[in-house]
Length: 260
Picture (cartoon, rainbow, N blue to C red):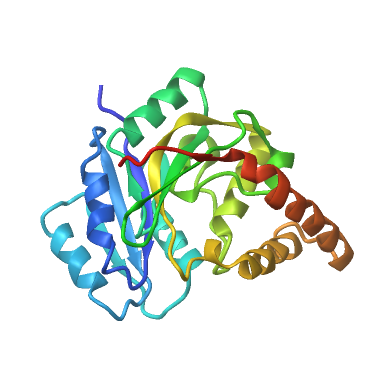
């Protein structure tokens, strides 16, 4: 029996330094029945030519070029429209998967009859050097927990499109992934992560994670736009978010020995 197809959604923008390594981490998967749909958001560096050169040698990789810079949300949504797989997975253009990521995660989903799951992940710096830091998550993640903190690393999330359909991606430029996981958890109530690290998250100086002020601003926007809360309601939720972010979430950050 043929294995189910996994559609990998990858937005790219000025990712020439990282995109080849990211694609290589997909090509190195022990699970080989996948398609990778990369949507470039009008890069001004060599990103497109690098992707195209690799795609010319691997039919599973599809490059789509947006006509104008539209943001990550539009790029992911465009890739999603082209996806044909039973499973939808996400990988940004500067992050990496460990070789058994898809195999282990799909086996976990099948063994536990889960339509959605994610995993722990390790952190690397911009140069790819391990930061000896692993990000874990609650083993029984509830909608309420996710409401106050995005415990799901985008580079690890996979959902069953036969179960959920294709979940629309918001056109806003930041935090669309959190909104998508919230949509999923609202339907299934709880989610289980694969309790091991299956990916490598690259922390860059200009990333949203590097700016706490940006994180607060964009999370507040989610409460206002996605949850449609008034100013008072969104502000109260931000208090809960800040408590979770500062007090609870650090408990899931572990110091590990360097390894890739």
